[in-house]
Amino acid sequence: MNARPLQRPDPDGGVDQALTGVLGAIGAATRTLALRKALHLAYHGDRQQLTVCLEAMTPGQLAEVAAAARLLSAEADQALARRGR
Image (cartoon, rainbow, N blue to C red; front, side):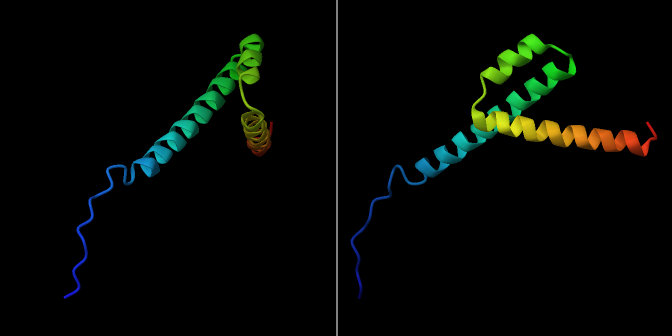
């Protein structure tokens, strides 16, 4: 018979992985909220608060905002062109 010693379960088993997942989700939500705030401020023409919002972002976040703004602008231009405007 192949008897193995009883192993106690690791009390931290999976906790690190779960915490990493939670922190990743919080990071994604934070980036999404920052983008939405910037979009809201731009839409309402609040340049002063938009500047403050953008200055608080990391270079990576600024790159994401710039890419999203370019895509939004291009798609909006195309939608207007389809409508003959």
